[in-house]
Image 1 (tube, rainbow, N blue to C red):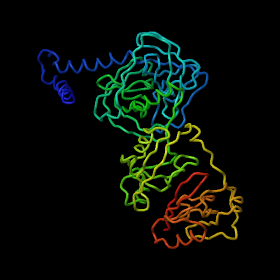
Image 2: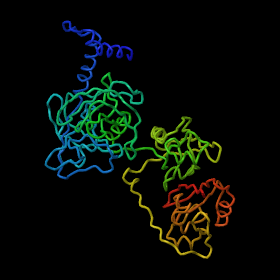
Image 3: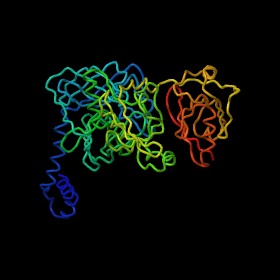
Length: 471
């Protein structure tokens, strides 16, 4: 297929020069075949694409959008005034009337109207939304509906044709052509890894399908890089299908999770310096309180290199592996720890709601006066043994870790650079248990100058780590 398409494109490019000043040449059979292929994509997909108008009595804005990116909304500033309906797109993924779109298209809507390619219009009800992926499922009561065909977005390749259908600039069922220009684009936050395309997309394309040459949906158009810059981003349809099916069936999305914060070594210059002997892996930066990982032997500072035998090097790769598991499933991790690879088993749990997980309050730790048993330290911090009295004085809950508690950190010191804070509970240093202040002082004094000491700590009930590196 690729060889044929290359030949087709070549014939189109060189057709005019060969014609010269002669009478207009008839299009070659290959050019007509390419023409028919493109037109066939639209004819196949358009009956499943819908125009969505949502009316809200509340002015809407979408916080947290990565800088330089915009939603495919009708208004370029990301707002929707109450006098004007918000216009977006969607597509039918079940013949009973279930439609996939973006959450920001219908968010806070008082009334939603769906218009089909054949001109029929229907009111729609919201079945469920997922803030994390910016996806939503709405439903209309209608007959003779055609659902899209879904592709496997994991097999999408950079360079393949991409087709977008939607309602840009209030122009319904607009069809544009381009290629997949990149994959696995990540902008942080909740957007995950996206498919990048240069197919022309503009405000109003939100929620519409991105298709392949066979007329199968590979993604849900969601973001653009500014206006008229030729770059757009789509949620991979494998992600959208999983979310949409759960929303359609139960109105909510359940996800497996471990409850860890992570970063790939390849994605962080700092971690490349901290772990110079590990070229590929995902660092466990912290463990959430009460998370499934807290009941396992997994520790902050561990580097996960495999999940059930599958190599992972980027945070997104680890996330995809965990999301592919069932809730409650046992997962075997290969973990690099202190110079050797160990096996760690952990059982997935159900991820709390996105909003609740992202809004966990941090405790306020009051400044404390030095206690008689407080230990001075050259890295710029003071600490003392964990006792019921010290915990009460610092306003901390009882720790399961024991060890020592940091009571003060000097501004600009090595401890401050490492991110240590008053109230941090240190349980381990340099791979050795810390039972009291003397243990920590001895370990810090024995470490070779210039080498960092990895500290395991508990902060606000969560486990994390810090690298204390005296200059």
